[in-house]
Length: 477
Ligand code: ZN
Image (cartoon, rainbow, N blue to C red; front, side, top):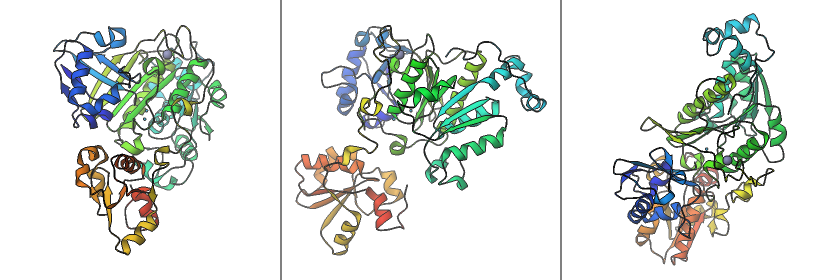
């Protein structure tokens, strides 16, 4: 049968997007697959041999947890999907609200009003609706722009970031002139320029367990446009506890997911993924990259789901996980079920209040601790040593396409290839490993030290720090 491999795991399958395996059941299929690709094993199974809880396996569109788990039988014609979590409700207003539209509004929304699915009653519901967008970034940009254009009356935005030059590739609500400004100010301006009838409420803060209940109280629907696991679990749990639908999307490289969670009878994000992946396993968009158009696609899908919830019409993504593969331009969907044992929304929930989500996701503080304790060298010191013609071997552990952007003339061995290519290195020499920002090379240094390379150091801050502190002609990316 065909086994579909998701993007984050393709690095362990020789970059293959699908693998043909013949087996009689899911367990046998996984054994054969991981025998063929041994590196995949630790990502799919925990040390005690159990399938990890942030990895879901589907046979066609059914979750094996609702079939016979790993004993689920498979046929040659079946398609098996491995769906790890990616680094991404019922009608909210029932009775027609007491709002009226001015003549200007009637004209503005005329293409809605002449459709029976929206009409005057629907447009009034939109005007009365209050939607909170978490994040004014890649997903939040198209989401907020379309919700404002469609006439959602109150739009809350939660963000604490400022616009960065690298945001402009996808965060289309911001422009060159906004670089350095708070994202909220930039977004508010654009939304007001499109539709001054919308009441934009700005919350310049990081969403936390302490402020989420208060923030959510004044809104009917929450749209999660965050890019990290702690906030995603926080949004989910706060939605379940407050009974507000969570319109979800996440993105990675060329792939996205979307669904609607935490409605009265529908599943929540924890029904799908009870636990987050260990930190560092699933790369973020900053580390793994993202096609700039992808958040556009997914953010618009989110906006569509929000509008449908408000109107109370159409078929919502409740109970369905939509998978978008932009590279193949394929849309697939998987059935989601409410898990009776879900810790958040199950029959006997164990989550009664918001917890410490950084800790839950295994993250201590914002900085990735990977580099802690790894011997390192500062860019200026390396420059001085190279200028003095010291015999230092530079090892670049980035990918070839990154090497093409900029390099220090080092020997290129991508981190993933390092275990198999250590023989290219001389353990008696002094080696300085670097990557883009110093995280991957810290892993390389740890790996090399464990393998007997005693004189390896990490270039602190990677080639980005080199560009900042030594050579400003090196392009940053
Ligand atoms: Zn649940």
